[in-house]
Image: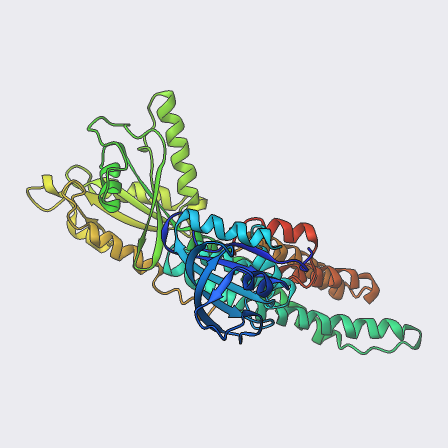
Length: 462
């Protein structure tokens, strides 16, 4: 965890590009660059150049010129890491990138480890651990929803919530420990009814955060949408139409899809992970049966179900019965079902029970001709459009989720102790445990092992 040396690394994506950015951070950053950089402005000295300025010049080894670059100056503590930082913007040649790094290494810099810049920012208290983790989420964001989650956490919304919870617990434990100090005088500094109420409020807030994880996880990784139905109703054709590519094999032979096929697209700023499944039927060969078992597993994972039926054959009564059977399954209580009547290109008249289908908001499409497929996208958006990420705190990090669960377990023990009227010294340990687990989230309580695990997942250069 030493931060006494100077690190350097490529901070732009590896490969050839118009430009590349190489970042240095540490006490020797300015000295190292000053030895290889010749500014175009003759009077300029990199060692004394003011912070937050950019300077043009040439980089070389003193014998030959390697490239013309821009040098950006950030003096401690006003930098990303809180240390002296210099960024070199050079041309994106792989040769130039490598030669500049070699020059930096020769003069005392070393290659940064994955996530080491952000680790130093955390150690220098530029932000807490949950905000540092949000940096990686922001880099990995692939939709507006995942971006909004990451940017909200990086700006400290989640950290503020955790700090308020910790402060409430600290107030409780300080009152109880004060009582313990004066236990022989039988002095009660804490109103038990107030403490019970405060604990109940904490439990509610933490439970709410834990409950938000399922939503945060799907917004971060993609909302799972399972395409299910009987064999040969056009599920694979529909998947291909939605994705606008031939992702799944299409055949008139029932049971062609033997395993789940997945792909992700972004619709209206939300990432949807579509899953084409094996057709649901009772009789099939061994491999198809295994595929159907996986279908049910994917149905459990999905938050939205597209139930596809053949509009040329299936009656309203038949489809409604099948839908009711699915909706009655315990795992499907909170899922959103969208009915899809396919093969309208083969219809000569309105499908049987058309009015009844309309009443349950069925979408009629021709997946083969890609007709009305956009209506499915519109319907999917309606299911998530009421989510306002700016007005609620959503947990999307598994580590935070597990820490909150541990906190809630301690809160339950505290609540039981209060209600049972036990001596305060018997549940102060639970309060300390709750504080410990909340502190793990923000990094107020941490270890080298935890930090190593978290930052090893970052890219080098960040």
